[in-house]
Length: 90
Image (cartoon, rainbow, N blue to C red):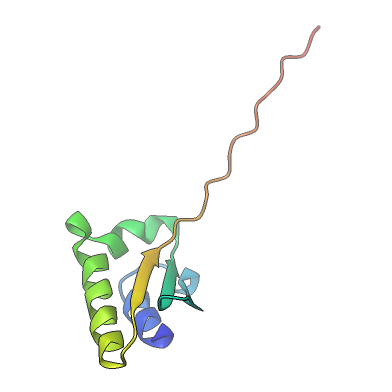
């Protein structure tokens, strides 16, 4: 499943080298986390979420045939915070 999702996402984005797909086994089923370059998030989400919903639907159909449940998440990397500059007394 991981390779399948990775193949789909890599063909959607401009930076395929930055695509990371991780699978975790949970108590209620499988969790798939997709990480992409911040410029490619919009391409993976699509208009009104249509692309990510299609990926979720395909994943759920495949896992349902195997008798499993799956949850697909698009994880955004946290943006580095700008450090606050303290005024210097002159």
